Image (cartoon, rainbow, N blue to C red; front, side):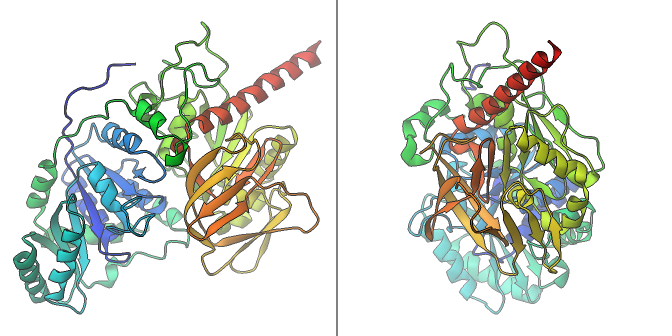
Length: 542
């Protein structure tokens, strides 16, 4: 592995934060990204917190795969190194916040907030303020945000939902006089900037290009009403950064209480250094019609490679590289980019396949990972793909490792009832029925503790993640069920998920960087299955 960079790294960047949800930070983020991309700049998008939809918008607007930064699910050292590595070859990084600037996991601390990520990345903050029905009061709001956290630097303000240009000039004068912060732009009240509801299958609309007019309209308005040169100057003036001195040691020191229960040690099964060339990052979400992507593992300069220590005790010959099939299309697309990187770094080869395109489980698969997404929007198509459903059933019956999250969990049930009330037959591996609801069923961070040994964890092991879903899972009375996790959130703890043999499924979207050995454990289970399958085939030949 190459030596760690000892020098300061220049990264032009800014954080787009809001005073609260609905303030307009996503519209501002997308418009600015598109404006700068139209200028020919390489713009890298980041999203604070556990979100899959906004990064998909970023990717569509910039043409580069957006990444998540989360200061609760992952350690500070990991987050800092990941940001530096992903942003090293771009002209500008734009980090979109989550909720309000100071909203996060804790009521009285910065944990998991946009503010914490701005501090960890030492980024200037562009604060978006909704000024509907207010004048000088806008200055009081900005002043409060400015004074709450002295370590944070609010570098500029954009005001949204102005009634007129005169209204903009009024609130600009008030904010600049009271706060000494420049107001560098504004957006009018405009129904053409309204982003559709987040839970209604937006990613397919992004893929089809249906939101392009919105992106272009936001960019046009911001280009007209914003001092873009001033914003670029603020981004370029962001302090230079340095890679954390020893991220692995820092993670080890944090221990279980910090959400990183352990770190890979040299010699652990499944985590061997590899110099096989391959993708340094997983692909951006691709349309189902494009060719299936196969990657051979990250380069040693990728973020995952930098975090993972080398295995100096590995045998002279490389161990078998198991293949994990990843369901990835418009129905299944909720994957953290670094989760896939960590699986590759753990020794897996990832093969993407599309159930919506009529594809089944790739024949070379030694394990299956079905992420979340919007299966309810495509339930009829999924139910009609017998190649996929029969393949999942056969794989589960054969003992192949099968891991599913949220949407994947729903598809493993016996049926899925969509919002219209139509019932669609699913894989039937889990003795339950999934029913879509009008109201959100769960939202928020989760820390999960394994109730038994399973694909990702030993009993008692912990991971961090989040839940966000509109469905409920109704298990059939009298049928056997073994819970996967004890899931702890703001509202308390409860058992969650399902395990049986090499099958593991739950609503929680977990982040593998919260406990690195989980990636190795899954890959090792796939490697064991591959070796056992090969031995069985050899016995049949005798």
